[in-house]
Length: 461
Ligand SMILES: [Zn+2]
Image (cartoon, rainbow, N blue to C red; front, side, top):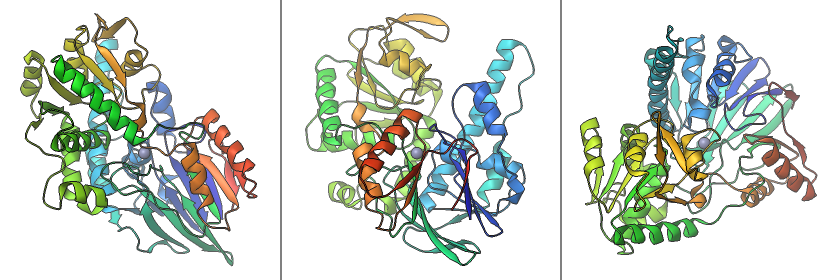
């Protein structure tokens, strides 16, 4: 039995881990690499293994860096089954279709800019439709057969809608190993979805380490800060622009605002969700109350819609979106993309960024080199669509809304997946984060062997 790491090794994107059990090959996640175009393109085109030889995929959740290369795997000949929860399949459909569309747009844009033919996309809409036929939906807490010698079991990961930690029982060569894969591990007490669950009786753990060297503030703190600034914005009739990831973060914000308005903690004021993808994903949330936690039902009851309230409007058309530019505050516009690198949020920033009265709420991670990062760093001048704009709006960073477990939570998790746990592979973290977590894991004195795999590195199990 072997495992080889073909992505998220020493970095946070491109999750892809290949298990070989007897004659069978099972892929854990098939995510896309994200980052600088040329580098990501090269990494995404080269799997490092033969897609036609993969017998099955087990998918932890629907973030692009975990599911985004599935249509390419299909295009290159993979025809096995893909096991995921039902909500993961539904969200993955939207994420993969959106990715196909963006690839097309980006390539055309750069080709026009450089006066050449566009590069072919990694995959198109037909590949997405093809790969969707291979999904086999599995509920949480039910054993399923992946291939001969491998069975799986999903528990809540508490990361995004539908996300799962994956327990796998591997039987081959007269041995029986229990391997656990966190996918991305969420946090306790996040809005909407249930808390992460520990895995049981593991021998080996593959753990994410995104924030392996960091500690988050609590959600209660995020809520307090959000409330404070919304009240201030209301008092001075500000426009609040919120660049937000369409998946999970947008729904969490809506949920929190809904709850605070119902409790009369903040005044009622116009809120707009201006992201076609976020609108579609919110629809998937509505279809999956099976993933909600008890607090959500206690707060909104079984019949109330957590994602709809009187002063909240979902914006569909471009003309409605443009009309928002002329509207006066107080108001909030939640728009994609998350790092301000495209989508409608750029237009809203262009129209609001140089007004001292306005606010920009930063709710997620902003990678180096993105427009979002320049805003976080409060550069005095920001370039949007080739024009320079003074950054005068007030920038508020809400760091504590992260969807990932931090170091204390990752340490707690590793210590509560059974007494047999011997070996831990740390993936999905930049080197300094994974290294910091490794040191802490070793200092627990539990006899753990900890590896930080390199890209393409294989291990015997
Ligand atoms: Zn994720």
